[in-house]
Length: 169
Length: 287
Image 1 (cartoon, rainbow over the protein chains, first blue to last red):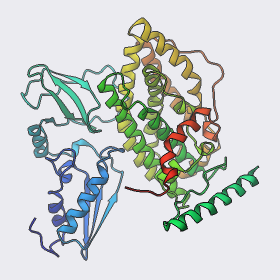
Image 2 (image 1 turned 90 degrees about the vertical axis):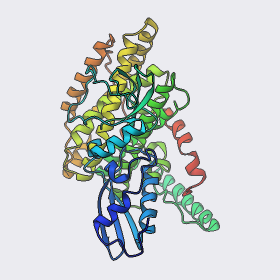
Image 3 (image 1 turned 180 degrees about the horizontal axis):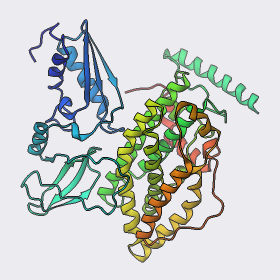
Image 4 (image 1 turned 180 degrees about the vertical axis):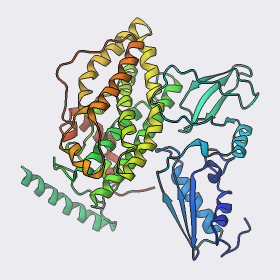
């Protein structure tokens, strides 16, 4: 980063810095692309960033807060406050098209559209998630709970590769 | 008795203060860890929400490294993580409402069992995997109904936490429902075991829908929960899944109760002695 002291004056400046802060669990997308940065404000070098957690118990949130703080301090912020909000609740629908493509290229199937309403869909047949490696739709869900809170595990019947899906929530 | 307890606490507090002074660290706020005292209704209500999830989350975490298959080990750990994360939000809010400087950690680790407000259902030992999944299913069905109602309640902060938690619990409910069907409609052995689990657990489901003065007390905060409607919704979900699972709905006349008022089974104390041991050995420690 070439940011010099005092270069953080606008909300856009802050977002530009945060574009460089990656999700520690999925290091190909930034915290902005992930959709967890809800707002930012600069007042006399004091930066306030409003973030919302992905999952309630996501253990990476504290690390993300630290990363946000150190990136902004390095970019010239005098002081940084990370403010946590719970509403509106985070949804994978906030992850943009470009970030979805980055996830796929990294080997993680991007999320489908989050469901609205309804309590249970026990017998609903879920559409197969396309394999991020070979593109085949001949895949099966292994488990809706994977290596991190935000992922499900699938297996591709075509290329025999197990893969993660960033699950829709 | 209350006087004895107060004396006891005073004594403990001064002892803790001396230790803190000797170690030159700020004393951690552990006020009011004991006794059956009831606080403000909103505080109590938030404790109920937080404690259900904290205690069940801890029970689930006992499976970590012991799951029957790798995917389930991971799934159960994920459930535990979500529930403990939710407990952190509910108890954090409870601490703010109480206004005595206690944070979520102080409430989780420095209250004794009579101060816990979880339902008895969630503190029962984990049993076998079938028992764990049947209990999870019964709780998940309650939780989604409860959170769905609270997500639109008049208390903005509670509504936000409920809406967030609901998204996660819908995934839990689907997963635990699938297991109940798979095991119930599985082999003779799996059917027998989950039917037995269901029979043992059923008497703990009544408490989930009890209404008392705390529920009436929070209505002033815009938190209105229709227990009868919730029960009807829960019944519909549970009966549907049990039918698919070829399991029989147990006939139980007398429901167990007491957790919401701090009267717990012996199991909670044992759970807390494990869960709280590190925090109590090193109050205020961080890393």
